[in-house]
Image (cartoon, rainbow, N blue to C red; front, side, top):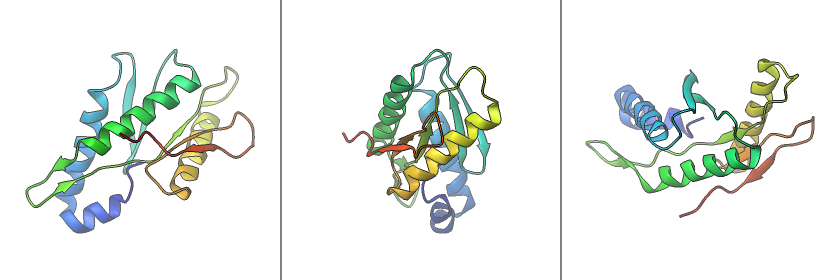
Length: 138
């Protein structure tokens, strides 16, 4: 979920918001594997599927993406804009529904936002609270 997206729209207009969405998607797509799948889930939310990736590898990869986004601001005509995000990372359990997987990732993403945004949280495999990391700092 792109952090403070409403603020981006308010300060840079809907055209600026659209540019931020496109920039985010292009930046992520250029930095993930060919087998990984990125899709817009709604509004400013995206899903990244990382097949055959252990949970620790997915957490590392998403933190690396966050670090890259910190270093590469979007150049708008009126200003440079750092587009950051908060992410929830979850590993699918073979007997789990897609809805349950997304709900766990979503809960982790909200935990990352509550911990200060610009962070990655790992979803628990049970009803425990997600673990939040501060994110990769370059």
